[in-house]
Length: 259
Image (cartoon, rainbow, N blue to C red; front, side, top):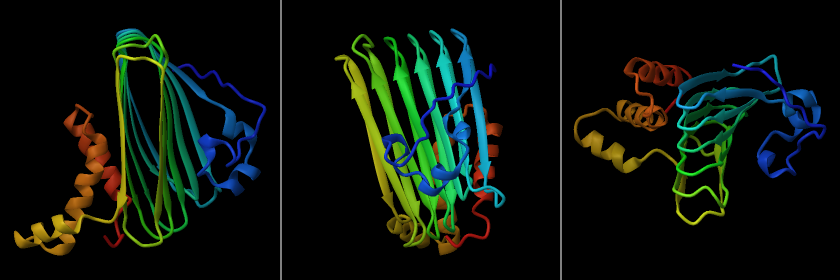
């Protein structure tokens, strides 16, 4: 992985759309270099690469911002799976450019309680025909925490036969928790398939009642529902062992939480 860092001169603030749900106090006080630099990576044509990230809370730091810019060559594939359990403020940001026939797959989860604010932010540029992307993000929040997903998809005029999908869902375990979704599609081509969906709510009571009617204790039923909910983000991991490991790591952050 190459590590060329691009730094802009302007400090971001919540007046900027892509930072609208961020922690304003952190943005005002943080080192501008941490907010504006990118880690650069290129996936060679025809190659497949996969990245993993687990962000944990750090009581010694006011915030954490991780920004990765990826260029996927013709026919290449890049998969990125992230668990954002950081705080007090934690942001995972990806800027992806796809060449002809390339694919980007994202599976992300935010998990937080207390007063933490967690974000997964993406910008995917379908720069050539027949490239595809799929993004699945899940949020589980409790206390007074916030989970955010901002996803921007850009399809220029000459990028025909492109397919792009985004799906965000959030479970709020307590009344004080919140989630924000800002899906954005900018499409100038005619022959494309692009869709996004978002849903925010509590645990599915009807599913819980159904499981209870089959003899499953309420607490066990809720744990199973949350497990299945989080697992959606990791379905695209083809390696069974890696998929289960990511799910186990995510569930670890729910230990001791009243579901």
